[in-house]
Image (cartoon, rainbow over the protein chains, first blue to last red):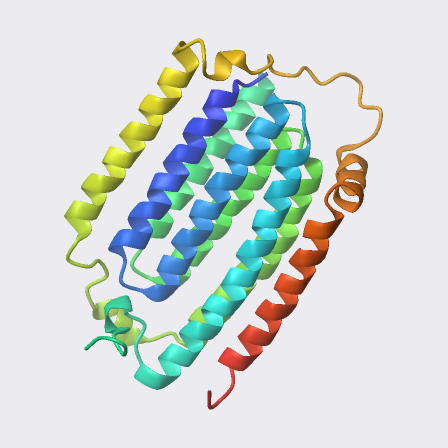
Length: 100
Length: 173
């Protein structure tokens, strides 16, 4: 039996890695991938505590989180394609059309 | 014992894959390492006796979302992008803040483990007895009985995302 805290530590490491990716990368696609990492870290936590409490609700929530990740990836990548078509670049700091 | 070895293998693979996703220069390499990390996470679900999520993770994440990512990378792949600076100017501040966040969360976890009000109050880890019915059956029952309204709302969310993605992909917005 693996202690639940082990899973929580793995989840924390993945979460922090994802946060670093979102904050430091300039490529929009890699920023989206880092967001997927963050969502994945949350899922590990949910499933670990679902096992810890012998309660399946956590796994249901993990399924909903995966659904949201799929929706977010589809719309996000659509936005990236539209952005690329207009500006011919993928850098997040070039996304300044609304800046004055 | 086998369980523990499997856990450390999958956990190490997941974290290593995550770090490589963030540090790789080429977006395609990042995508491949993200696939590694997601598959390792699926393995972690297996060590947690969550078989249904294991399969969902592989089919949906690795088979669906990651294929979408790779397609988009191929569509917008630029050789120029590889020669640009990949990290922005706030890298050091961001790294510092992220490590502060990690330290804070680890401290919270240690505190919760040592104090009498934290995880100690949770019931002891459940030792799985002989399963009356499988994980998938239980999840299906829960999903279609207790969580049927969130389930329907999720289907509407997916429909909205579908329409949104199609509109975003049109030639002229």
